[in-house]
Image (cartoon, rainbow, N blue to C red; front, side, top):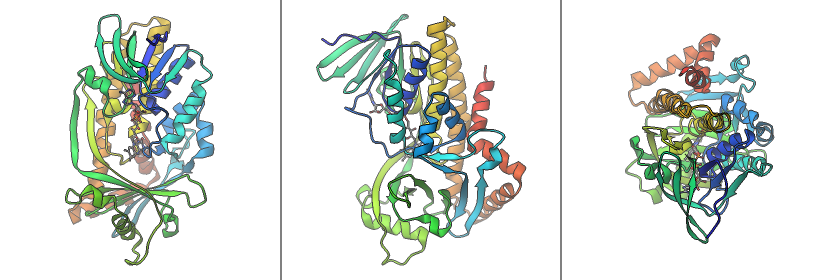
Length: 406
Ligand SMILES: Cc1cc2nc3c(=O)[nH]c(=O)nc-3n(C[C@H](O)[C@H](O)[C@H](O)COP(=O)(O)OP(=O)(O)OC[C@H]3O[C@@H](n4cnc5c(N)ncnc54)[C@H](O)[C@@H]3O)c2cc1C
């Protein structure tokens, strides 16, 4: 039987949110053990945009400089329309008095997790256990008993505090019987990556292209070689089966819709995937001694790049509050504040804005579509209004809102 690690906090999931929560706790002297179901860090081609307040937080734990050397700093991004072309180009330097990072950083999340792992190695009071899958839990007033599948068979360990950072399908959340309220969109989203350089068509490294039939979100990601990797995210209608959406001809057709090239032009394809999209938030981010963070607590469509960013905001907030409870003897009702702050801003901000972004990009009514285009042009042309718009889209307002909740 494996001996239980001595730790004040157990964290399920060594994704970006679990590792960051462990790092915040470790830096404040709290011991923790992280359980990861997979044999190593996962190579996720998912989140790739880091907003200014997130970079400020990652700087606090000491990984932002390394991220800067790996990522692409995007100081301008565009709102476009497939028919009407460029609508607005947003200049993030308007935020230069609001943040030391007036840009978005493009970097795949699988490049962040090794940086966090490296930092954790210098803390002997942290253990990351791979091939350890959380299975189920029971709680009493003093601790949580957790059943874990390990390569040596199942074990049962106890922990004073359990953090669920085990992703959208969180087994911890299910086992704690916390409702994941919300809905799933009928369409799926496809991700297509190519080395074709959309910059030659005048697109900035991040551009959202509205279209009533099939909008596209464009991101340039760092990769080997100067063109980098251009990633497109787009909706796939219910009438298109998965295997057709995952086939090369579908990707070629989709890229040609953006470039306007003729049917004989072929583009280099590097990666294709398809996934379901949800808008869901756990009704409570705390159930006694179990706390939810990241995708285990909330999921949303990727338009605006809020998913991982809000998970990182959770990790910092939760790590700080748990450390105060454990190290400084602060009453544990502080953790109810964690729920109030993070649940509120997820509902009011992440859910609302990601849904609004989606609706705007797919607007089918020509009059409403033109009205939206005019509004974006007017906002962008006025630096005061543009700054207000960017404070929201860059998540700076969401942090201020969370901090105002007592
Ligand atoms: C295509 C796509 C694009 C996206 N783009 C963006 C973006 O640009 N910006 C943004 O902010 N967000 C984006 N997101 C969202 C982002 O990827 C997620 O919000 C982020 O991965 C959440 O991190 P996490 O650590 O909470 O969960 P995960 O990254 O899912 O990590 C969970 C970890 O827990 C492990 N695990 C699972 N079950 C168990 C178990 N039972 N026991 C132990 N371990 C377990 C998993 O193996 C994994 O390592 C995107 C998502 C997708 C799908």
